Amino acid sequence: DLAALHFWEEPCISGSRENGTANGSGTVFFSGCSLKCVYCQNYEIAHARTGKKITVDRLAEIFLELQDKKANNINLVTPTQYVPQIVLAADRARKMGLKIPFVCNCGGYEDPETLRLLDGIIDIYLTDFKYMEADLVKKYSGAEDYPEWAARSLAEMYRQCPESVFSEDGLMKKGIIVRNLLLPGHVRNSKKVVEYVWTNY
Image (cartoon, rainbow, N blue to C red):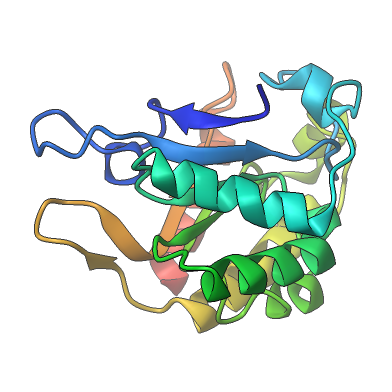
């Protein structure tokens, strides 16, 4: 199922038993991805070999069904290529009673112009910042210009969500989470990412 409760995101997204919030994140996987990472854990989905076509109205219904299942949020996984449809579906779902936050769960290789279409819709950006070294991203993800676009997209995410907001029970309601996968043998790259994020934000 490409839309279901997901219990293994960061605890402030999926929830935790300790805080009594372990309802899961209402995850919707979108087929395709702007990156071709050799280590992708969702290969069949990311390479658009799994999935089915649905309407905007059906997508709005899925958001509401996940809310009915007590999801902490709506978690849009690699949604970039479907932003216009998501904007319409989110608007319809809100008008039909959707109250929980939207999470944009992406690889960081985004165009700020596309992200601007999500301004006011996305509450939480759950983004990767994979690389600062162009040779690594060319080798492992096929996008040599990733560091430049990741920096630009993070700046736009920060413009939209400059402050982190949490509920009393520890769930994130607004803000940004930046992830970095430490590649074996490439600690220097991860240090550069952390230094960049720390210095700028």
